[in-house]
Amino acid sequence: MKKITIILLLGSLIVTAASSYAYLRSTYTMDTENSVVYLPQDDPADAKFPEGAKIYKAKCVACHQLTGLGIPNAFPPLKDSDYLMADKKRAVRQVLNGSHEEMVVNGVTYNMPMPFQVDTHEDAVNVINYVLNAWGNDGGTITVEEVKDIKIVRP
Image 1 (cartoon, rainbow, N blue to C red):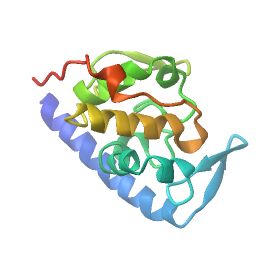
Image 2 (image 1 turned 60 degrees about the vertical axis):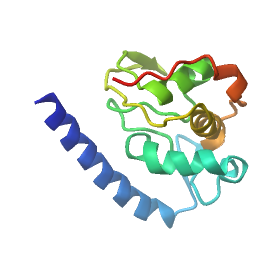
Image 3 (image 1 turned 30 degrees about the horizontal axis):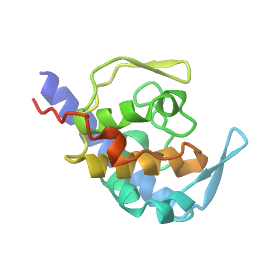
Image 4 (image 1 turned 90 degrees about the vertical axis):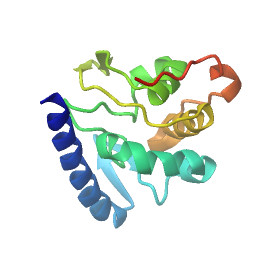
């Protein structure tokens, strides 16, 4: 029963993301609480981290959206995320192995499980470096050398 619920939820998120992508693709910027949100076609992080941008758009956009703002009370934001910026290595671990732990992001609690998204340390570093620097984030970078000790665990 849990698997069916998750599959239905992910399916609806994919439809939402696809329609959001079509709409946002024609919009260059938008105002969110008086801050600029960079979209894929004009975000400097796209050019600086192209492999990470590609992975993000293929694997992460359904939940975290093109804007990095997530879906309120379901999927946390990555833009201006205190949780993300607090521990880059944890972010790589979660992309590699998924996460079933509760997390508090910018004061909001999230409980939705996250499945693993990539299979290699290199891909994890690429997508996290993109996220750390997309949408106006100024999170710096992390290297493969810094995360090579993270064990990849599959159920």
